[in-house]
Amino acid sequence: MKTAYSFIRWSTSRQSRDSSDSKRRQLKSAEEWCQANGYKLSNLVFIGAGESGYKGKHLQVCVSARTAAIK
Image (cartoon, rainbow, N blue to C red; front, side, top):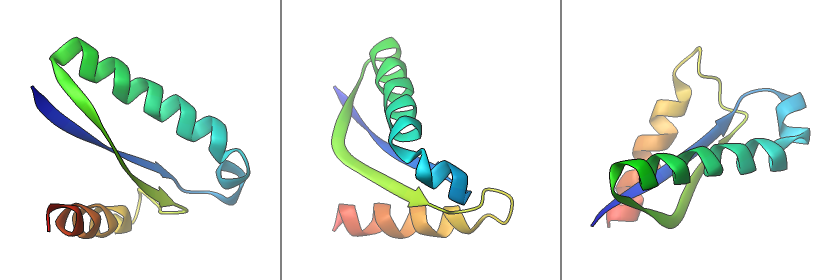
């Protein structure tokens, strides 16, 4: 079975205060996707707290974290 890795991100301070719910909802979505597509969700979760999707900075965080996990 293939393994999927979750990258959870939120961009505002308001979302950071509510991050536990954001994290829970995003993990649930990832778990549902994995179930529907035959993947196992890894326990290794990458989090980009306060990373703006507009500027694309979260992509650098994601690539760096993935590279470190592979090593």
